[in-house]
Image (cartoon, rainbow, N blue to C red; front, side):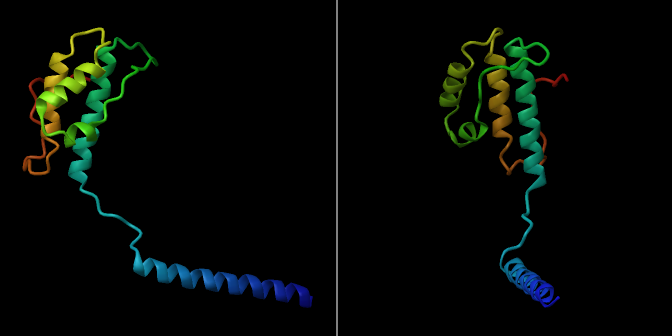
Length: 130
């Protein structure tokens, strides 16, 4: 029995040490982060729209996926629309349908990711169809 008590004491001490270190660390570093929901929602809407449009441009059926990747962050950080267009044209060169309308719309949507847009809505040249 004395062996069992020693084992229980070790566990109890371990739990106490764990709870003490957890309490200390939670004071130093908050466990939750604050996100701009509006910006995240805009980004999600853009990503969903891109996915839908890329499937259409590449003629994807059912579970089939397109084989291109467009990194929105790279496009957002690129200041020059001509350079953005050039990058997109290279990536989309193998599309089955014309891509210029998609590129124009994507550039508008990327500009609207700017947090200075007070309306929080995308300015679109056409209505999305889902």
